[in-house]
Length: 315
Image (cartoon, rainbow, N blue to C red; front, side, top):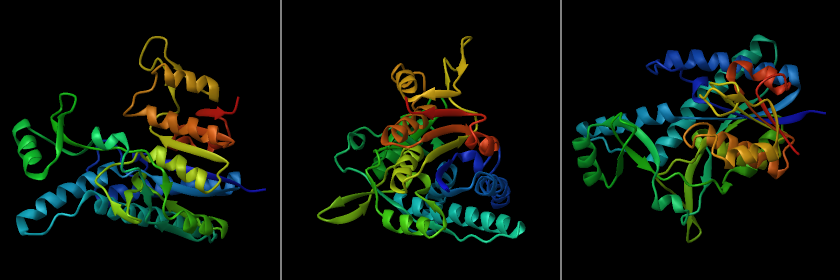
C-alpha cells in the first residue's frame, strides 16, 4: 500500500549559501533536488506533496519593489510578493520534476497551487512583529523608512537594521479541498510555498496581510490536510541536536515524542532555526502522524528509509 509524505524543502534546495541567486544557479539546485524527490517516489513507493521556503526570493523581490518606485512603478504588498514567489519556485520545481521523470521514461502530473493560509487577525504576533525580512539598512535609513512606510525596524545581531513583520501561526489552508483532490488523483502537488500567503477573514471575506508564516509550521498543517503518513523536513544539517555547539553536543537519531517535547521545552532549539522545525515535528506526531523526519537534503532517500536523520516517533 502506498504511503503519503509531505516534504518541506529548506532554502538550500533552491539557493546555496554564497550564491547570487541567478535563475541559472537556482534552477541547477532545483534539478538536484528533483532527483532526490523522484528517487523517493520510485524507491519508497510514496505519494509526494512538496512545500518550500522563499526567504531569499521574496527578499530580492521586495528590493525590486523599492527600486521600481524611482520609475513610478507602484510597489506591491508583501502578500502579493509571496504569491509571486510561490509561482516562481513552483514553476522551477514542477518543471525539474517533470523532466526528471521523463528522463526515466515515466509520467506523473505535477501541479503548483498558489496557496492562501488563514491566520487569526487577533494572533498576538500582530502586536509583536519579530520576523526580519528584506535587506539590511544603516540606522538612519531604516528609521526614515519606518516613518515613511509605517514599518517596524530593529537592529539585527550587529549586522545592521531590518524591517520586522508579524509571524502568526497557521490556522487553516484555504485551498485544502483542491490540494486533497489533486493528491487523490495522483498528482505531485507543490503547495503552501513560503508558509503560504497569510490571509485573515473579515466580515466573511479573505484579506491578505503583511506577515510571514513559518514554512515548517505551515508545512505541518499541510501534512494534516492531506492525511500524510510522514512529514519530512529537509535542511542543511542532518537532524536536530541537543547542546548544539557545546562539548556535550548530541545529535538525535530515533527519538520519542515525549523525549523531543522535553528537549524543546528545555530550550535546546533556537527560535530562528531548528526551533520551528522541531515544533512542527512534534505537532505532526501529536496529531497522529506515523513519523516526522528532520534530515539533510542530500540524505533524503536514506532518511525516509529511517537510516539517517532525526526520526520522531510516537511514545
